[in-house]
Image 1 (cartoon, rainbow, N blue to C red):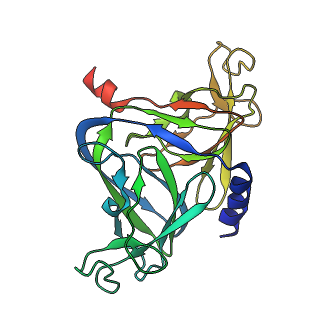
Image 2: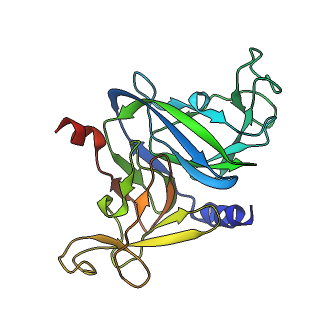
Length: 244
């Protein structure tokens, strides 16, 4: 928890927010994201069937601790909000035997989570979350200055070098921070004009040694974007690629 709270303090100081610019593609999908016990960053990569942000109650859990011991932590640009997992067998907050995400008062919550939103999952043991809905047709996510907790808005693995951006600061000033369950790895943005680490004038994500990195962001996982200003990240469009 120490790692999370340290980052939370830094986030509160920066007070950023982000929005995912997505619309429905009418392609229905399902995704299961497995993770180890402890702190993990997962991502919502679907919109609701028919369009719009997905409801938190559509997120299913398998192996999560009963009685609100495991939780999702979302970031709204100012502070975290915790939503606890209550299983229907021992913590029937819905009154119908169904599982639910609720607040500290053991009441079910109504919260929409847009595609492209990443969140912490705090789990006692290894478990999984399941997401479902329509795959967004837009593969871009907007961000503002500071810390942004985001994920690719479509449920596919992403090569970090395929992530492009507008508004990113040159020379490695902006970075992606990936959490592996125990520590962060930082990957910096180098623009091809002033920081040509590829040697061909192309933009790249690299390490502190100014060398391009070979990193994959798995489907269903998110990361922090640390940015000097506002802009947009654009990810490979799986819908567009499958249609070509």
